[in-house]
Every structure is written in C-alpha cells, then in structure tokens.
Length: 83
Image (cartoon, rainbow, N blue to C red):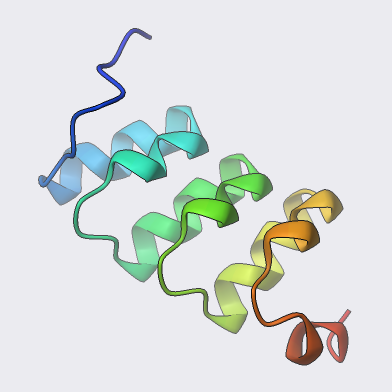
C-alpha cells in the first residue's frame, strides 16, 4: 500500500482502516482516539511509539502483541506491575 507518509489524516473511519493494515500509520493520524490506537497496536505493538496518550489498556495490548514494545512505553513503572 502506497500512502503519502507526510500527510496527516482526519477521517476516523479511514484512519481505523489504515492502521489495521499497518499499525505504524498511526503516526499520520491527526486525531488519535483510544480505539484507533488500540487497532494500531493490535497490528504492531511497536506502534505504541506513535501513541500520543498512552493508557494502560493501550500499553498492555502493545506489549501483548510484541514484548519489544515495552521499549516505547512512557510509564514503565506502572506497567511493570501488571506484566
């Protein structure tokens, strides 16, 4: 899929579909919702690095998908209690 990487996308429906294809496209989402972020990290846990507001739910899903994603979790202390 060839998508312009410098464009920021606003349409939530489109964003939801695109991050299901490649979680790293989250970096192009203008208005991140928890649902869109969850879809992105379900596809690629390391997409957590592009999540603006990392919640415990998103972080745990990212680590579940790819344990290497822990590297990008901002609030490591609270997450380590759960892992």
